[in-house]
Amino acid sequence: MTVAVDYQRVLLPHPGRTEPVSLKDYQAEDGYAGWKKAITTMTPDQVVEEVKASGLRGRGGAGFPTGSKWGFIPKAPGAKYVAVNADESEPGTFKDRELMEIEPHRVLEGVALCCYAIGAETAFIYIRGEYVCAADRLEAAIADAEAANLLGQGCQGTSVNVRIIVFRGAGAYICGEETALLESLEGHRPMPRSRPPFPAVEGLYRRPTVINNVETLANVPSIVHRGSAWYNTIGVPPRNTGPKIFCLSGRVNRPGNYELPLGAVTIRELIEQYGGGVIGGKAVKGVLTAGVSAPILTPDKLDTKLDYDSVQAAGSMLGSASLIVLDEDTCIVRAAALMEEFFRHESCGKCTPCREGTSWLFKILSRIEAGRGVPGDLDLLLSLSGEISGKVLCALGDFATSPVVATVKQFREEYERHISGQGCPFEPW
Amino acid sequence: MLSDSTRGEIERLVATFPESRSALLPALKLAQRDAGWLPREAIAEAADLVGVPHAAALEIAMFYTMLHTEPVPRTRVVVCAQLPCALRGAEELIRELRTVQSESVEIERTSECFGACHRAPMARIGEQYRENLVGDERRRLIEELRQA
Image (cartoon, rainbow over all chains, first blue to last red; front, side, top):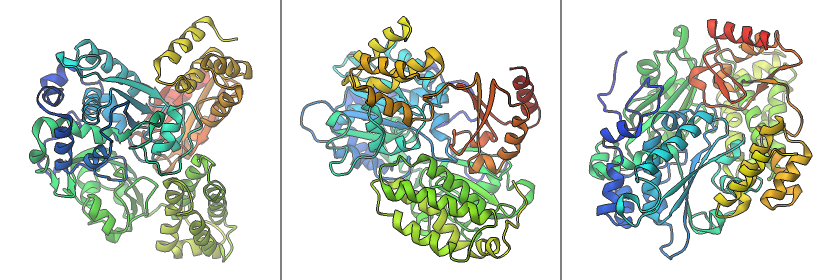
């Protein structure tokens, strides 16, 4: 394999490994060094400042600055919580799974540092119910870390207490939406809350709460241990610092998780040099960069660097950096229908435009694919999308329109061929 | 109708959380273990142990895909047909698996993603992931299902 970037992995240093890194092995690689440094030599505010200086942005999708999020937590006494978003359910995303399965202690150390920084003593890792292996490994790692007095009461002889609880979901994409996640944790139907109040003020059990993605927190141990100046040598400072795990899937020869600095490679380089190229040497028809939740990029955008700002400038979002590659044999209408089928299934039903709209979008796309489309359908898809986007409580509704709007705009001719030819011109797949 | 051990586990769970209602979802998952699904009586009993109205537990039980308010076949094979898996032959896998469908083996197609897109196509059977279901892996699974 040609390696485009000379880079020492930070988050997943053992590619190909299938067993979890034990506490002993993690500590041999400076594991928990950041944690010990923080609770014995740093104030919570200093930890927040270090994370702010690192430039770390949320790896769950939104890319919000992590240190600023922590800084929003009020200083007043009283219970505060950390909720870790491990409900990884975006199609094409499988990075948090590998982090939790292989590097459970790195995740736990990040959670503990977040707790210390904001003054929380309890953290919940909200993990999707299907990730049984990852949840079991996290629980085993918590037990080991507590037995070593790294977590629990009076960590390492200090007065710091940290209790981490693994909370297993039961199958619902909406629980990855942060306020729906809190509802689920509280034993209610997981439907997004109206904001304000924001979780930093009124979150879990109506107390100040930080909600961070697994990969985000997995970045924190090395930031605290090695310092923000070191972290800024990775990626493209100031807005795109640090390592990122890119999930590569679809029609490539070597799908998988590839950890690289933000902005180090282009989409084309990731596909060709890491993913081994497109299967059968076919041409790329389009690439989704944020799972199915952001606009598809066409082949003229393949030389876009993989960082937050470059992908946004190209007309999409980096999101969770889940790249799904579609080749020239892929029917775009069928792809859009599959994506919309997902949103129809996952809409929680709280907001009418999303509940009804995703269902209608799916029905219209399906009839076009089946050769029963009518000439007004494309404008109908766009106007219907306009009735959902921005008119709902959470981002799911907006996400649900992007497979439709982007593909109709960029592949209109292909849609029209389905309608005029009364059928799909592609081989079934 | 819940077993003594399940009741005991739910009672312990209730004491784990800052607010007892947080135990509701995990309690329902525990309750489901007893019969393999959630009869109304089991939902009501879990609700009583957590201290919430029966309707509150029922609406949770009906929301999540991993909770079943009706009996499920002994072997339930859930195949992901979302885009990354579809691009790697999920529909063909479903067609082949359906040839061994029986009263005790159900093949279910889902649009939900299970986070195994790099090992597509894949299926979930109970709590197990079966990945890279091509060639020998696929043949092995089909043979297992035939025997199931």
